[in-house]
Length: 181
Image 1 (cartoon, one colour):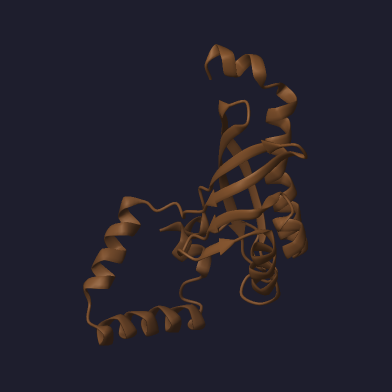
Image 2: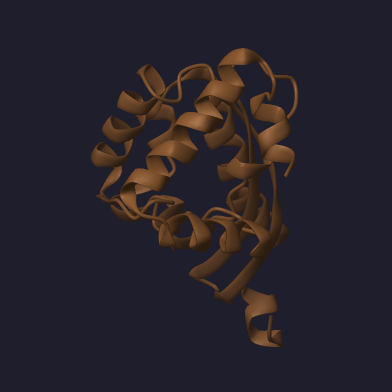
């Protein structure tokens, strides 16, 4: 932060920005799409980890509520802020780490770790999120595995998928063991 930015931002500004993460985690853990989207502006952009572009608070809320009610039902989040960087007195970046705990699990699932980058602006009403780019944390080892998997024929990919599903169903491997790799 340059000296001029340091003079025009306060600890209260940084605290307000950092509070967004806790508000969103709390809303996620309650399964509230509306609560999750509350810190976003009406026109915010949200890019999900798989590339879906959500536009505006209402779409962000609806998308997450549908997910909370179905595919991510019962998941919980934990996380922390890596840094807040003020670009100027009205614009900041916040980088966080998010970990997911799957239903019935006690530990986080490393394959679901995310590293979102927030773009936060200050308006008359206070700070709000204008943009969020959510990306999964991906080790080189996992990327090489995915590259190898992608190079297989569709039939071979199906066989690998069926093999893993069979091992999980028989109890030979658990989702936690897969995530630990």
